[in-house]
Amino acid sequence: MDGIEAVGDAVTGGLLARAVEPRAGEANGHTHEKNCLNCGTRLNGPYCSACGQKAHVHRSVRAFFQDFVQGLFNFEGKIWRTLPMLAWRPGEMTRRYIAGERARFISPVALYLFTVFAMFAVLNFTGALNPHSAKTMQEGLKTGIADDQKELAKLELKRNIALAAGQKVADLDRRIAKRQGDIADTQKVLSGQAFASAQSDNGAPGWVRPFIKNLRDNPDVVSMKVQDAASKYSWLLIPISVPFMWLLFPFRRRYNTYDHTVFVTYSLSFMMMLVVVGGVLVTLGMPSLESMLFLVPPFHMYRHLKQTYELGRFSAIMRTMALLTFAFIAAALFAVATVAIGAM
Ligand SMILES: [Zn+2]
Image (cartoon, rainbow, N blue to C red; front, side, top):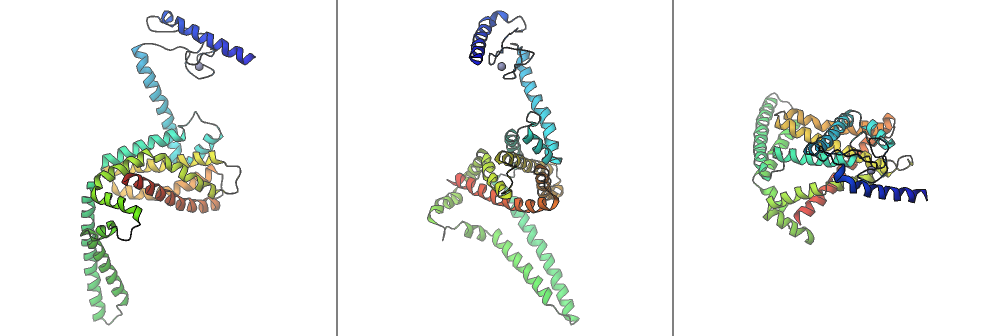
């Protein structure tokens, strides 16, 4: 009965507040409410106890921008609290978030969407997703061949010297053959033979052939559609990854699917942040630092797992190795799904 009365009160209160609103609005649009303007709950203090909205709202141009700036700073304050924790103490943050400190950090899904957006923005800016960056790949292959040929010349010189000295050359012969093989392979890729054979639909199952034909005929369109699918369906990575977490903790009832989902979503967000950092480093002309970033994921996964699930060192190492394997499988599944959607 109490509840119904309270609701009744709230409804009439809300209606009343709305009815008097135009009159209550003074020059600066200040309102004096007894009930929350958002949900009608009776007010007791500067914020609504039911929905959290401010008791007083303003109807002014200044308020219009204040709403925006406040929202922005609220997000900004949280993101500067969340990102350093995610980088250095990911397990502690995940633990605390799971335990209930929800308002303190950016929620996993919001952070995930934010990083997806940031990642695609950076990748587009650096041209990494541009199909025409194939030209720079070709130049890379050419320098690769030149380097191999230099190395080959050195090896052949060594072989001649060794032969003259009457030493064994079996090891050198093996290394020379390997270099020659490398050069031949790279030349094949450069001349387009490897690409052509990869694209030929001979032996491909019937249902795959239309995709291959589409890829060969319109590579730019397919590339765009795959990017589009990858960003649109980026959330798929979360449900793909959670079952692997079940496999990682089969007998731990203490940790449930919610915990795993929070862990996976924060972890994936961090990995995408790493891509963003890599893109920025390349743009700043520091590619050598960028190549170091490949060492970060295993280290981060180890710390994240160890702290979140309160594991011992050995158990954390074993699970990090398993998680790395699972991550590759999950990424491959996601790649197949987006390419399939993009090539359709
Ligand atoms: Zn309210």
